[in-house]
Image 1: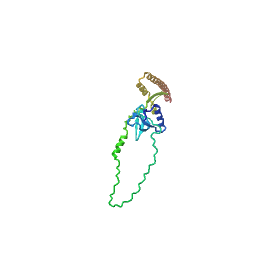
Image 2: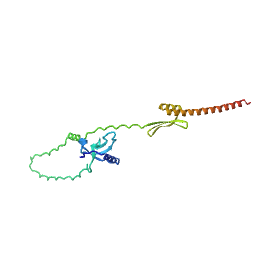
Image 3: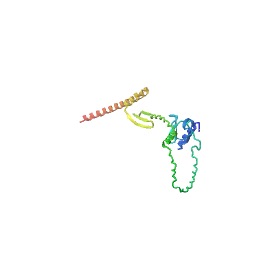
Length: 230
C-alpha cells in the first residue's frame, strides 16, 4: 500500500498521459480512508485553483474527485488478473448396481440453498465507497467591453467590441453627440481637444458659408441685370 501521495512531477506526468489518451492507474493511500489499497484510473484533472480535490478517479462505476495526497502511482503489474487454471474435472462415480429390495425408500437429493438477495445487496453496500460532494466550479467572468469614439477626416465614429468579437462596426455620429459622450468621461484634457476640433470645423463651415453667400449675391445681381434688359 502506497503511503505517499502524488508529487508535482507525477501530477504533470498524469496530465501528459491524459492528453495522449491514456488513463493512468493509481492506488489509494491511507489518506483516502477505507479505500486505501484499492486501485483506480485517473480520467480527468480539473483546475487545482478551484478545488484541491482536482484528481478525478474512476473507481468501479463512480468517478470521484480526490486530492493528490489521496492517491499514488500504482506499481507496475498492479490490477492484472492471474492466469486462469483449467478447472479440474471431477470423475463421475460409477453407477451403483440396482438393489432388488422392493421396499427400500428413495432418499431425496439434498436441496441446494440459493444465497439470499438481501445478503448480496448488503455486501455490495459495504464495498461501495461513499460518494464525495463535487464542489461547483467558479463561473468565468465575461470578456471585457471596449467602446471607441474616434475622429478622422471630418467625421466622428463610434465602435464597440467585446473580447475579440465586434459588437458594432464604426458608425458616424453627429459632433454634438460626440461632445456629449466625451462630457460623460469628465476628463478635462479630452474635452478640450474635442472642443478645439469642433471650433475648427465651425470656423471652416462659416468660411464656406460666407463664400457661398458672396457667390449667390453675384449670381442674383447678374440675374437682376438680365431681367432689366429689354
